Image (cartoon, rainbow, N blue to C red; front, side, top):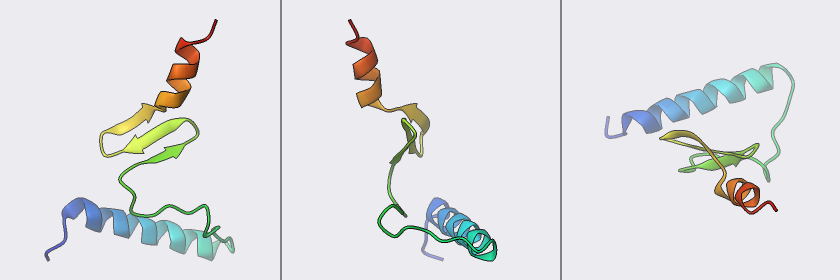
Length: 66
């Protein structure tokens, strides 16, 4: 109620992942954790609502390669 569907689904996904990690006896690094961000860069890919896109800085380096 009053919460956008994709935000609610994201919160449920985060909760499920954190629960599984905790159950496995693992932890998260607070400095490295990014939650509720419009986009994040993971292993050279920008992950956003539109999908996974190549990181523009990596593409520029390839295009400017001699």
